[in-house]
Image (cartoon, rainbow, N blue to C red; front, side, top):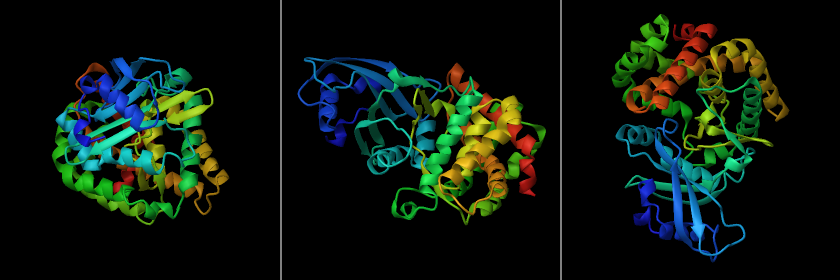
Length: 362
């Protein structure tokens, strides 16, 4: 299909376009979509994309024709598009489904169709709708300890599979997480922290607020802790809103951010954002140990729990840098979006305080 036909909004998806897309991807053979229903799912959840459930109605029955699909497209919000461009998110997700989805040892939605035009920043993915198999996580509600444990074991399986793998150097689009964090700090941090402090400073501790003006510069030196690896494929946005809890395990969604990175970043990102502060204090040591045990069971050697814990604490600060930039650039223009940002800063601030992570900046 020509990229000029890529829809830019949910309203642009017509029965004719959907028929061609599903046939092009092999999900549809003879049937034709004669009408469709669309339901927006991304309000307050996806800040850099439009996500919708599309229910096609066919002219004839066809075995295997999807009863519903999930459509993902770039956001129409300029702030969100700027964040996506900064990290190359839209292109990376298309590349993931092309090059990696079939190989990763975790469940991902089936991709029925994908197309993209980098110049015009027009992309679309049609993905399997997992709703019949379980429930989507809710970052504001926070995960239960059972869900968090399952998430840790899923992460360990992904990381152990790709640990120091030759493929990390062979996949050209798999960017370095260190370089992405450093690039974001250099390009956007100085202009971002005053606005984020204004919007969300009340959710931060006095010590974190005091650290923000120099965090960008000092954070670059912090990256030296991770510069020599070990590296793995990190999801990059591993949080409750991107996890689908099925009866037979977790399906991992939203592959816009996979990177070649230090594994502890995914762990810190999840634990300090998707479980509440009290649970992290009580269950955090057990969850961290379970993750590390999973790495060892997956064949990872020469990475002690002590080294992993040091990387975890440093990763909390890397996470803070990224969300200082996100907080100033993204537009949480609805009630759930604003609440999501508030809980992220509150939980992350508690984790940083409890681990004395700011001492690393000295």
